[in-house]
Amino acid sequence: MSEIASDMAETLSDEAILQRFHSAKSLPSGSRTLGFRVEAVSQAEQRVDISFEARADLLANPMGQVQGGYVCAMLDECMSVAGLVASGMTCVMPTLEMKTSFLRPAMPGPLRGVGKVVRWGKTIAFLEGELYDDQNRLLAKATATAMPTPFKSFRK
Image (cartoon, rainbow, N blue to C red; front, side, top):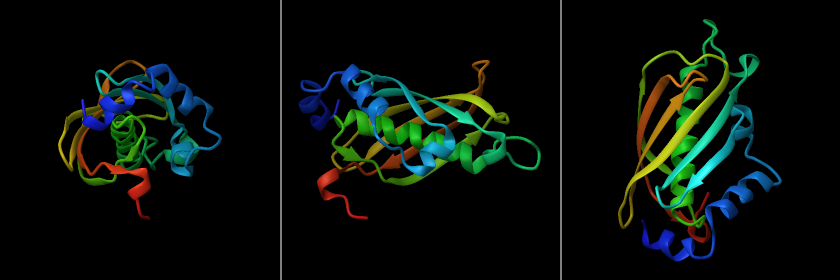
């Protein structure tokens, strides 16, 4: 666990972090578009489970599948939130690079994502994400490198 996360883990339980997500007054518009909802948080495992509701009228390509860019956005959300949770809710996680492997088409409807922190270094975090359909079939996997940045230091 990161030094930041271990300091904050004493003050915020997994349940408290999950409640923060559920009681947030507003979601970023991109998250709303994806039908984003945090379902479970584990600071000990540096993992999050997220559900998405992929609406056909917003996210489908001409073949009726969820467009690949939206699949990438879902995976990026999973990985970024895993980093946010691992930081004890103190850091944003700008993505420096991301690689996605598409294993099968994602269809509109409910989707489930998992985000994990693989390694937290001094200035870089290595992240993984997976996206599943409602039959628990793996649709896509991603890895990313991110730069944990304390909220107070983040510049837009």
